[in-house]
Amino acid sequence: MKRLAGVLSIGALVLLASCGPSGGGEEEVKQETADGGEKTSVVSSYNFSDEEYKVLLPYESGKSKGVVNYETSAARGVIINQIANRLDIDEVEEGLRNHSKDVFSPDEYYFREGQMLDSDTLYSWIGRYAKAQENDKGEITDDEKAKELGLNPELNEDKASEKDFRDNPKYLSHILEQDYMIEDDNGDIKLGGVSIALAMKSEYQFTTGGKGPYREEIPEDKMLAQANEMSKKIVERMRSIDGLSDVPIHITVYQEAKKESVVPGSFVAETTVDKGSSSVGDWDKIDEKNVLFPSDDANENYPDESQYISAFTTKVASFFPNYTGMVGRGFYQNDELKKLTIDIPIQFEGNAEVVAFTQYAYSQIMDIFPNYYDLEINITSNDQTEAIITREHDTKEPEVYILN
Image (tube, rainbow, N blue to C red; front, side, top):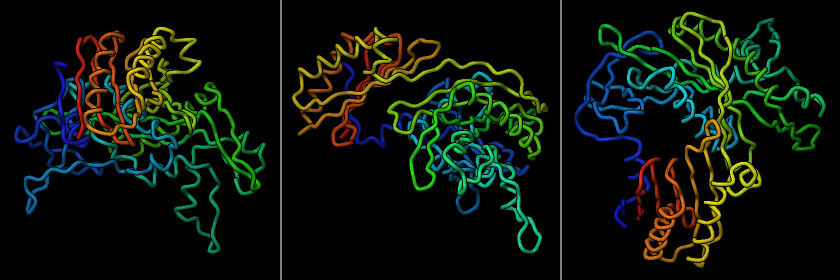
């Protein structure tokens, strides 16, 4: 095998994939902060891919001079509490960044995690609407005022019947913000635009009267209608926030998968509000889909890829005695396969078995799978990654990583 590379750990592999060369090559720039102030940041002159955004890193002076730190989201952790399926969390974050490239080119813009919408703001917006109530002193507290910002339908859940829940589901799970920074004429970095993703439910689960959980399917057309109305309110509110009054706002709608799904949901629509405008115009359809292999859907609608995976499964099963099955996920855009990911869990008893199995899988990839899409094979044992095989589209030979 020509391309067999060993790495020390999965952490090292992730570092290679997500960072790029280190040491030197940094440029100090002045960056606009969310409150309208200014701070010094660092931009690396290196980038592991021309198709990806460079990231701004805050630069600490004084005692920690020379130290750079990643700037986490102002609403860090909210997404984990609001979206039930971990696959959806990864998909909405990566997908929003990819869809933003058509609006905010990586050639011109830098990426920054969202700093304009903090946790308190998001929790109030994604809650249910409720009329603010005065306390015993005749006052309306900030917590009560926040209830009136809720974008999901009004409902007293403590007293609601099953029918009430079904008629008034929670549509909106989360609002993900990403900031795109640009250099001005003075060489300073300022906010150039914002992208948001509305994570919308495809299914609402609830309990009432000590019974349940019940489920209510949410049709896509009904979900999109709600997303459109919510977007109008969100843009109006964002325009009132310092720093957001005069930048483009790119809005996407992400339809979540069901909670127990083994493939994530997908983006279904997008639009861009011009700088200075508060008007949400027409939406463009996004034709994306994540397909499970094997499945009835895959067999019926994607027969070619189903046959490739079936042939690969047969070969692997005949080669290794502890093989129990594999799960594949195909990511399609406009009905064209863009990436195929296959997870193979196997019980290994030693490194020699890992190497032998990986070599065999490599050979079968070369023989079976065409190369017009990206391919990733993850080989695991006892929930630990043992090997990864990747091949970019239009590339003949895969890259192989043996871990540990």
